[in-house]
Amino acid sequence: MIIKPMLITGWQTDSNFYKSETNEHHVHTYSVKPGLEFGRKTDKSLVSIKSSANILRYDDQNDTLPGQKKAEDFNYIEHYAFLTAETQITDRMLLGLDNLFLKTRDPANADTTANVVDRYKYTLNHFTPRIYYQVSEKFGLAFKYTNFITDYSDDGTGEGEDSNENRGTFNFFYSLSPRTSFDLDYQLWSRNYDATTSDYNSHQVLFNLNHQFNYFTLSAGAGYHNREFDQTVLSGDIDKFIWKLSLKGQNPAEPVKIPKSAMQISINNNFNDSGTGNTYFEATRINASFSHLFLEKINCALNVWFQNSDYKTSDREDNRWFVSAKADYLINDFFSLGLEGGMEDRDSNEIGRDFNNQYLMINGEFNYDMGDK
Image (cartoon, rainbow, N blue to C red; front, side, top):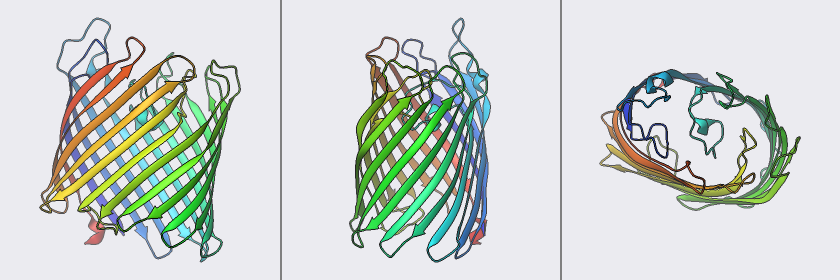
């Protein structure tokens, strides 16, 4: 059985809450996040549900300017729910189903390469049935279908646009050796918008090669992405050569709750997917994370990312980066205290789009695994 109640409470201060170039606003954020994971696992099947509600309250530390919203106007409860179920119906075939529901104000959840700074509230839902078939000892096939719904709460002009995406993903896996594998990933999807943004169809093929060392796994991929729009847009139809490269590892190599040391570095180049207002760009993104467990009690981590966004519908080009450092003190197996600080910066060639924000966060986390008792 899987029974894991959770509670996280935290305080955060931001020097530039609205991520504005000229009107920096200092805001404190208070949060209380209860949650629960519940499920059951057998030799052939797994069913798991994770759910949480994050109560967020904001407190202005500066006087609000005329026409500017108060921070407390953004108070809301963020919701997260994830269901996964899978079963090995034969020795060769695995069937699975995943569903992710999220209510949030964070634009990064709608698109991992998002370059906007708005706080519009919206819900998203990913529904994904999947199937995997092991053809032989070295060869396997996989298919999944994803329906992705984005629904903005206010539906006001310029406050986000609802969309519906349907995506099919085909994978062909082949093991060249016990440590080296190859896979071919083909994706076909369409995204339909409810208002003025043009619908589009995308085709993407990616060839990937993976090699495992003692503690590290190196992956490289290259392919092609073509996107065709239903209406005339400034960029016209777009296409490009795409690629990605990653290196990840940990010590010990086998899966553990908290590794002694871990690292992950990745770099990729592709288009963004969510382009409300036909604002599409080529994104080159670097992510890096490093962690180390000191004295079996203090888990320290450094996270860095950088993204260059080269817009296809204008001359705009942005460089945006983020860095954070944190330390979690593990009081016991189910309770920890954490301290985190960081900075985010965007440099754009368009006036009014630069910003810099520093933040500091303190939190306490309770996470108890009743299923292990």
